[in-house]
Length: 284
Length: 289
Image (cartoon, rainbow over all chains, first blue to last red; front, side, top):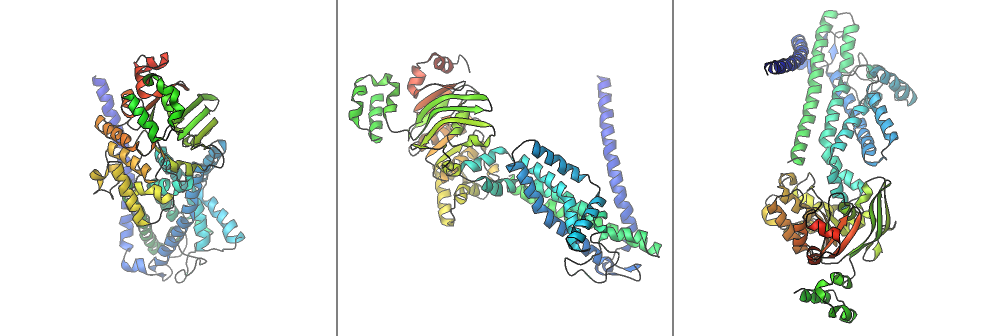
């Protein structure tokens, strides 16, 4: 008996230690960035463009650029991804083709992001002629987000009980009406989880926008989908690798990192909030 | 008493007495098939075989269901009774790899023909399932759903129908202040009556109950049974049940299924008091199943 109790104690302690390690890493990153970046943050930092060769001013254009790119990516990938997931789970005949598709989609999620960047450069920038622009960057990021959105949506759709599909069909609804009016609303919280995950990933990606959208410095603010933009992740990368004032630039880079994290977090909070409201409506 | 009941029944069904002169002279109580001389069945199966893949689940089933009657289908688990009832509104088509032979007629027309739209059919042949399955929507939206998908847009008409259906389903009194609440917050019995109301809202002609009380407590079960007896005045009702007491309480006719065969069908009192087949007797006396 005693040995079993000790074994249990050791087991629980090991689990708790792993948990603690996670929190330490996570907290460490946030503390590290906050302690170095907070000094750079000010109202001016958030609302002004960089000046004096990137050693002063703010990151407003980069912040706005990242916002546009992320928004564009979600607007592109969300309908496409959800439609694809609906087809795969609700319509397509079950069998090996669907399994191959599912595996391919999951593999797509593992493709290095710089490869997506090259793909975007070839297809959107050059072939489609969108140039280095918000549009090209958004589409590239959207493709990057697709696998995440598709697999989260598929999971959410599969989790909708078959019994309420039957209920709808038994009332004389068509399959399409059933999907649109019953299945999708019930799956929405899960789909939004996918969106949260993909927004976090998309907003922070550097490689895909490297060749498709981002510039080290653009004068003024983007005024069309075809504008080249500054973006936070690339801004951080550029500040740390280019320029001639390492000390000031590092300070701004940490400030930008903090803003980027805050941006991703606030988007996630928004999605979590929407999801919570949905759950309340749909799950008593 | 049965004689009286039978004659009244014939009258309401508009059957010409001259045609039953012969049988009337016979001892009516023992004449299990008497109802067969009655009205045209509302919905019936003729020579139905059903397969899951290569496995045969139903063998040559022929049975008719009379209007304004409750027919109970009883039998042990796996006998094909739920499989059978799902053929009557083509819900079996949701399961891939199944095959159906034979005819199923609704008012004399084959519902399996390509000309019959399953959505249209299911409006006429409603279904209440084993486990209450309300939509994760409000009480009101649950009942309004069937009307909306069937193209009703008049808000007043929808409201009227929703209230009417909830009243018919004996749920209105308990629920009239909670129309905007989520249906998932209701008790199991209330949820099942909501599902019945939802089904009534689209004005079906036949209602199929697939073990509607399987997950309910005795009090809720009693309410559903009362409701079924009330609904039979207007609808053709088929109910699959595990519970033989329930079949005896609610049904006019009973069909006994065993391993994919229809063993016996007749008036409920006859089936329970004087079954003709040895297997029916074994089942209702609890010797197996």
